Figure 1 (cartoon, rainbow, N blue to C red):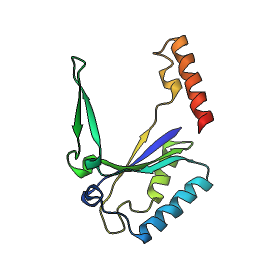
Figure 2 (cartoon, helix red, strand yellow):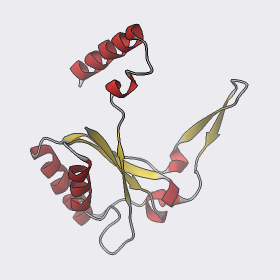
Figure 3 (cartoon, rainbow, N blue to C red):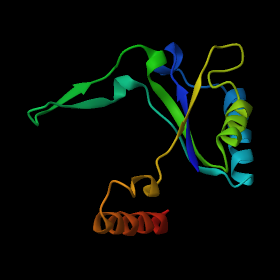
Figure 4 (cartoon, helix red, strand yellow):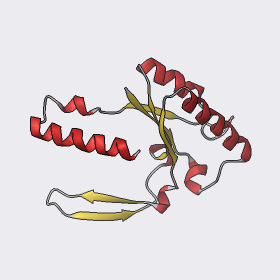
Length: 144
C-alpha cells in the first residue's frame, strides 16, 4: 500500500527560508534510508504558496484563478514523500524516523495519508473504464 507523508508548512517555509546544511544532510540521510529499504517512490519539497495559484471550480462550470499566498501556513503543504509499505504501522514508523521537518527545536507536523489504488474504484467504475485506467497506469509506470 502507498502512503503520502505530507510535511506541513510553517511561517519560515512560507517566507521562503531555505534549510541549512545540517538539515539538508539529515534529510538526505533519511531519504537514502527510505531508498535503501525499497519503500521510497517519490519525494519533493514545494515552493512557498505565494509562488502558486489555485483554480476554483464554480457550480456553473466557471474556473477562476487565485494567486497565492494561501491562508495559514499550518494549513499548507511544504513537501511530501510517497512511500510503498506493507501496512499503516510501517508507514507510521517511517514517518516517526524523519528528521524534524523544520529543524530540531521547531514545531512541525507530518500528515500521513493512504493513497487510493486503482482497485479501490473497481466497485464503482465500469469494466471498460477500469481497463482504460489500468492501461494508463501501466504506461505511466513504464515512464517512471
